Amino acid sequence: MRSLRFRLAAWHGALTGGVVIVICGYAFAVHARAHYDQADQRLADAAHHVADELAEARSPAGEREVLVAARVLDARMRVYAPDGGLAIGTDSGLPRMDPTTVANRGRAPFGWLPSLAPSLYRVRDTSGVYDVASDRAGERWRLFVLPLPGGRRLVAASPLGPIDTSVAAFARLMTIMALVGSALSFWVGWMLASRALRPVATMRETADAIASSRELSRRIEVTAADDELSRLAATFNRMLGSLEEGYAAQQRFVADASHELRAPLTAIQGNLELLRRADRMPSEDRAAAVEEAYAEATRMARLVADLLALARADAGIPLERRSVELDRVLLEVVGEAKHLARGHAIEVTHIEPAEILGDPDRVRQLLLILVDNAVRYTAPTGRVAVRLHADDGMARVEVEDTGVGIAPEALSHIFERFYRGDRARVRDPGGTGLGLPIARWVAEQHGGTLDIASELGRGTTATIRLPLRVAGHPSTA
Image (cartoon, rainbow, N blue to C red; front, side):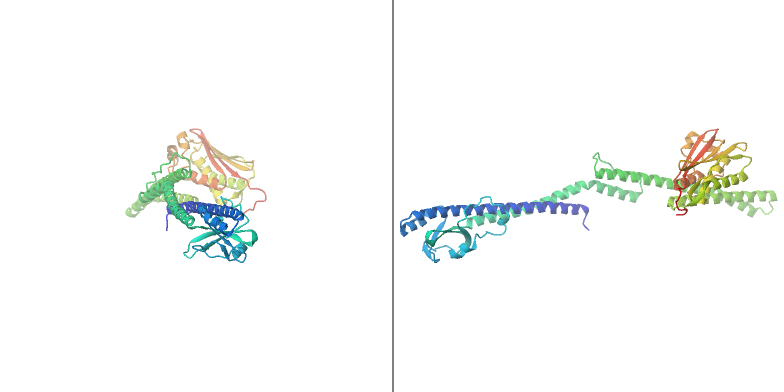
């Protein structure tokens, strides 16, 4: 398979070489036409001059002298009788012809190529007729037949050998120039293509090196020229940056997931080992070991469920779309949270009817994550307030607590997977650090947003904005 550089050079060579060939061919046609037309004009002028001299001649001898003297005009002259026979002159070295036949044929061209070019020497004579004939030796002659008084015809002949030789030499020169020009245009196209595709070769080499070494930190040097290739290199570098960030995030995710799964598995394994070896363990210790193993298994099950949800998010699997009564789901979530609360005051301070399009299970999960977080990070004597507003085509859910709050330096990291601030770890050591990333993904999948505002020691407010269902929109999709 030919390279792109060869194809570009071939296209450049073909186009430029074609132009060179056309120009050389046209130049040859103009040059040949000019030489032959100039010869025609000289032959016609000589014939008219001889015809004037013949008209003044008093005898056949005088006419012969005129024809002999015409040789200084670089032309051979003959006079034919009305019946087509030779009257004055000689056939020696000249082509045989019938002037009557020539007179009836009209002007004969030299060939198709000279006829393509415009005439640089307009032949003004229209009283005579031109023809081309060959003698016994094969040399071409240009003939001009001019009518004379009394029905006679004057035939002027001029050899075309010198002109044919000059035209043939010029044709060879134009052929060589066309070939050299085509080869030169291909070479120039090859050099231009090599220079233009050099950044592409650099990108290919960099991509090969990255594929071999997996060093995503490598970048392509971007030139100062603001052209398509420099912009392609910049785009390639941005793609490498995105891949590097994604790869690093994947490595962190795998490491964090392994770390989070190792802890409950170690606890479960240790408790089971203890139960297996201690046959006479007191019932209270045995119950405590079973309870701890069960708690760790529950935590691990929650972690695996969260990981599956994030895997679904990364895979881009679309959510179910149907009508969801957001106010009803919110009340159910608050009721469930009250059963799990340990003395917390959970209140719905404002609620309006709101209907959205989405996945009921995911919407419920979103609300439960925020309410559960508010309860977990708020002291039992604290307060959790929930509000639902519907205005300007958006449903706005606010979950406000009076808990420990989030430090300013941690607020920008709360949506990172497995991230949990120090206060969060102390308050809820069993958390997975995946709740808020999942909540944000659910909100974005429903065309909404999730924002967190917090002040350390004074509480946190989570705000969800989801688009309301438009009237007439189908309930499922």
